[in-house]
Length: 115
Image (cartoon, rainbow, N blue to C red; front, side, top):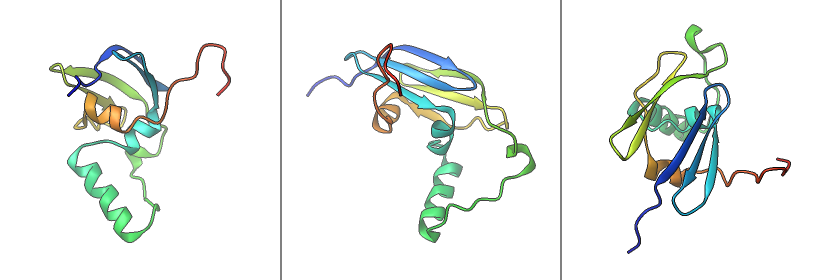
């Protein structure tokens, strides 16, 4: 069994994305909307499950969610995760590095490559 890849560099642009460079050389870029859409907290998971069950994506946003979301901070959780803090006050999602690797949207573009 091989050791799981671990982050060697995390670059957070609070209004744009999180870039992770992994110990195996891979790089992944997670946009802010993508991270929020895949929040691993119990409340967000339950909401996603309900939407999937109802086969709908229609969602009524509360007043605190009507403006574009940005990250206001991030905290390392032990050696296994990062907790993201959102501009709407949501801060219960703990993104394990294993989870981030599983939901990776794809590798980052190489310098000079158009995405």
